Length: 79
Image (cartoon, rainbow, N blue to C red; front, top):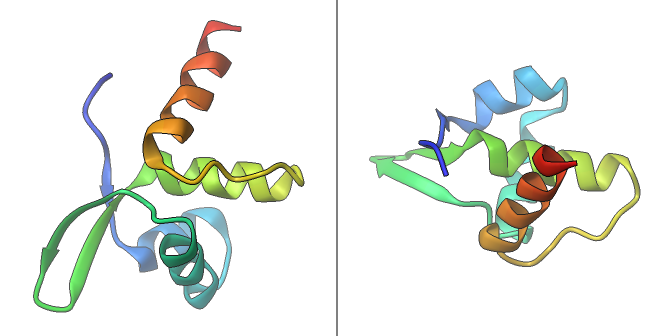
């Protein structure tokens, strides 16, 4: 797997066009892959947050672990 793209909740919310509070809840509820935390700022794996968004948007179950979400992305690339 290639390197994860670090992103803050605020930046992810802007890219996904969702409220920051919504993306923050997703990150917490679905245990999004956190890459780094300095002070109060945390950076997450952009692809993991985007996969959570995709699953919710399509009305599909969000797998409980980042590794299972990695498998979804891998299967989509292979298709």
